[in-house]
Image 1 (cartoon, helix red, strand yellow):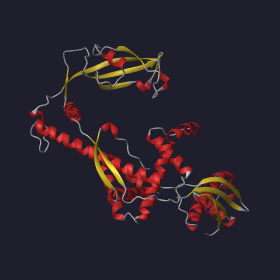
Image 2 (image 1 turned 180 degrees about the horizontal axis):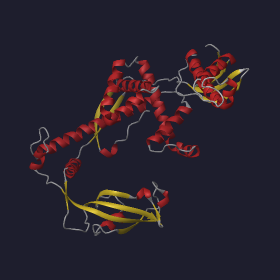
Image 3 (image 1 turned 135 degrees about the vertical axis):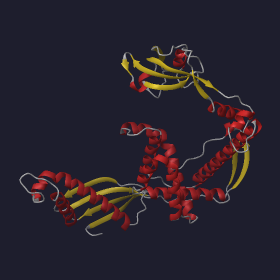
Image 4 (image 1 turned 45 degrees about the vertical axis):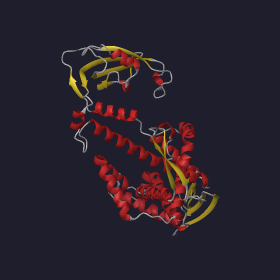
Length: 439
């Protein structure tokens, strides 16, 4: 490592402290190159382009150039030290100190987390119940009714001008709280089915009898525990509603003709439609049983395995989980409060991931380049209009590596299932729990 000296100190079982120095010659070489690049482009008053001396450039751009060079040197030195010392890191470094003196060079310290050693519990020849939720007649009836509702058609009401329950209306609504506008509740062209329960009860009741094209006030008192929006909790919001269009929802009869008109393979009458719907529900129950048993096998193995968790990785996982829940750009004090809620699940995810990695290593599993290309191709094909965004994602450093880790963990999970003895057990839908997730 030319111009770089480093010591790696053990902090604990899952972290190391890097003490790194970059000699002044290497720093100065980088500075010279950076100022040379600026000199070739910068327009400095009193000098021809590319002719401004370095001392003038330092007065104008010195702080910015130094920060950029030092940042790049720290990043490059970190990569070199990790490679030289063969550190299996599991995240970016946490810079704890840095010092730069032109005569002495650059010194910095950083803490990095490394992959923990996993003491795997016994995972071969495990036994587990594959719990398949029973499909009841009521579920089939509900699915048939849902299909019937989806096939409904809307017919514009030309003569009637007052809203009734069951109507599908298009409306404009303007919301205000104590005379002040509430833009987040203001909509134009909002379509709703009256009585479907998609709106607060006060709003649903207020819509009944409203006359088309006439602005009508509807007052809605939000519940005291309105967690989604504390500003309106327990308060009265006024909606000025103008119904623009009223449509009748015409739902087809559930009979042989309806079944035949669907055009589904093998469906000719109501009996065969019911059989197909029932079959799909059973298939879905079987797939959910597969997901559950995979989660239960993994949870059992995690419970029998021992490893130390890298705390910064757990914190990043918790932050990612909050992002999945729609909570992004969270202030630090708020994050500390919310982290406690998701921390147990974050720890489970991290622990499960490392256990699966250990299974993959024990079974000598791997992912071939052809498999990677196929998976990326499948994702691009499924992405549709977002394919360009996905291509950009996979052009970023680490994205393909993350995909490979995920695929390898999937293979490890398949291995756990293949080596287990499973027994199918029919259970009530209420008796099944969500499977353990990995991140």
